[in-house]
Image (cartoon, rainbow, N blue to C red; front, side):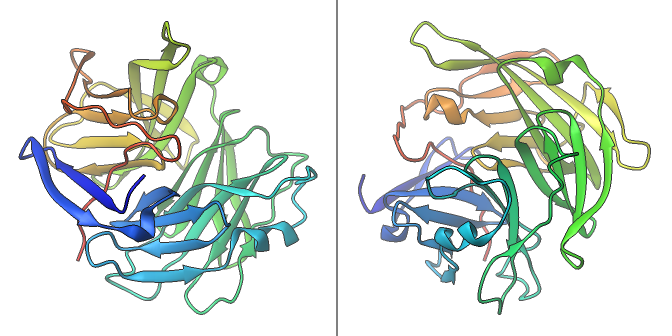
Length: 290
């Protein structure tokens, strides 16, 4: 609840930077491609580069009300995830896709130069469940739903491009989160199982990783990440070609459930010695970009 943010470095094992970031105060933060999409209680939405403090103004969340996507409750839509197709630091040819919820999950996107959000057409007579994860992969946005459906969306036509149904018992689990992530050019689906802790929160106990065959619509479980690590948290997942862990921050834990998971030994260990709690936004991953 102040204007400063600490950045903890995994490689150094300590807080390596403390930055003045009033633009992030009181806002939900959705990191993607080294930037952060921020959403405030006043419904203001921006793209923020945390190290240069460069700010890109986006249409407000109220503008999402205009879309007829079964959002029939009396509240305002709230952005739940935000994913960039590329870093604004590297190109002006990028797309920001957001999922937002009111009565049901909806999708919209924005491109530089657009005055408003563009609705992504979703046929709710076919699409089942809420949005679990978004990922830009090889020119398309992939969306996995909690029902096990995977839809492929093409922003050039504003609607779905392809669809397949995944079959696995994990889509019936009660406390589970799914993440789409690209590792070494391959699209993976990560599932995260959690259990209730004595305080009523959730605690991670297991991860499973699958290679997602986007042609056949099939899953193949893998037990090794090679020389790569996956980072999962508030806004999905990312990866780097180093170490061999899954680093996680459970959103529902508000900063209590953070750890490193070894996929081969299935052991979890702590990587952050402190306690970082926030009623607005839990700790999140940021990959430095310049």
